Length: 174
Image 1 (cartoon, rainbow, N blue to C red):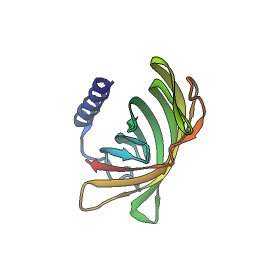
Image 2 (image 1 turned 180 degrees about the vertical axis):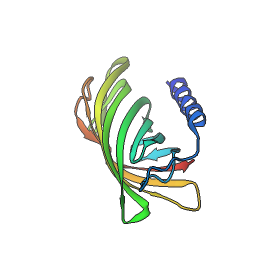
Image 3 (image 1 turned 90 degrees about the vertical axis):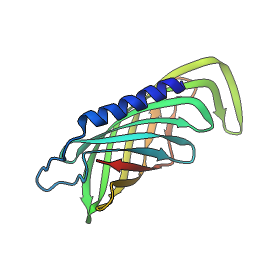
């Protein structure tokens, strides 16, 4: 599983380098960067994030995350986000949705204990929503964001509606 995460991380980095070009202006624009690459954290999840503006306020974001208690669990998420300015040029709010697919080991958490549900892994697709705020610094290539990302799992022993308690991201912008 670590090789899969490493492969997708390197692939994302190469894709960013291939698409790194000067930011286009779309009139009264809310985006302050073309692409941003960084990390996402919350109390249970850690991972990589890449966000790219496709046109005007429309962006796509990719996440590769893992639960830091179960390092064999990996989730790949793709999101569409619409951004709008709130007050200052550096401050945006965004909302959107997307899909994810998770690869989880069969050992699953049940409130106060871990339950072994067999050997191997299972795949669980689902739907995601996202709403948050972000601040992009003017003088340094840094973007900080905080958001809520509720989701629905469809398959596996953890099929449920969940919420990651939100998360924070720090990204290098270019």
